[in-house]
Image 1 (cartoon, one colour):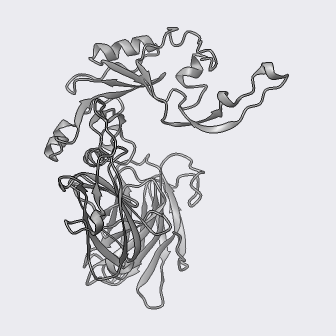
Image 2 (cartoon, rainbow, N blue to C red):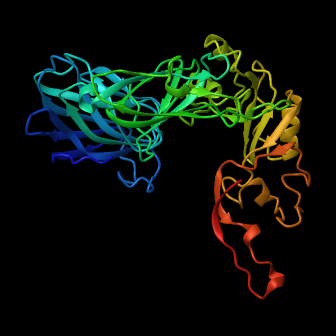
Image 3 (cartoon, one colour):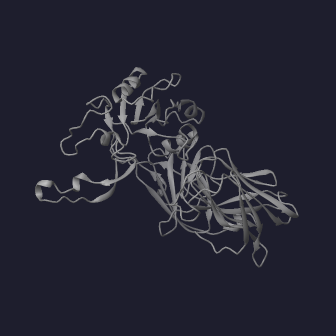
Length: 448
């Protein structure tokens, strides 16, 4: 994804909250592009050596610099690289907010429009700000393109629908878009209330999908969770033609899905769901989460934001998704000794007590609040030693343990088997001491 950037001279003056840059920008030979900042910056409050594109230590909580340009009579565009955007970061030029940076965890290149008359002849001012200064991100390699996003990226508009095999009714679905090599493609101009989009993926709660991608060969796959079939299309996109597929005349019923698995007597359920809106982590708004639940065929959705009794019902009703899934109010009760999903709860009630260090008392508090089910989440997170099983000295071979946090019993009803990753030696691959004088183990990355 790296582009050859033209050189620029950058002198940084670092303050406690904002990085100020004095720049001399570079331009292309035809004058259609300016490199405003060739550097990548790290903003936030934590060290992030795992992000090699920027300094491991944070530089501040935002970016501000001046650059020279001419007035843009028409729409231009701004290109930049970003990583780990989960909160709101706004881009301003000359005091006007022109865009909110898209939410994405991956290191990607993004483009935003610069409306006509935003720039002035002479000195202009760029600013990147956030209301969450502790949010660690990387941002930089900023280019000003003297053309629209659609022209800069050679975008083609694609419209399609996903239908149920028997009725031909539109159904919620996930649409994945890749190049012929299987690499996810950037998706543009797909944001609306009934679509949730990330790199190479568009969820729809109506069955109708509209997005734009660069011209070329693409592979499109429609799906709706493990109970349903998949359908695919291979398209050769050429500007400026719009590609419209998936109607009653769709080739060979290519975007028609059928229920393949008989799940009579079972419910498709997700018991651990977060939203950025109420948990403050991840990158999905509660509205986007409604779309993805419908698109993945989930039938029972249990909200489990951290220490928050989230009620999905008002959002589901407003978006017209009541026929697709049932909502249950829950809570990931986040405590000093572990995380527990408890449900059902009343959204009007106080959250269950979560500051105690006794597991029995904690679970009793959840049940007193109305919870019929309590699930222990990722028991080996954040590490084997610090998780509930490590503290309780759980014997992996016998199941015996020491009294943990006031009790020798585990009072929860169920336990997650697949969730957060923890690095540790796998006891199932460890040689038993009885086999010889030495014991060996294989370190792996495992889920709890």
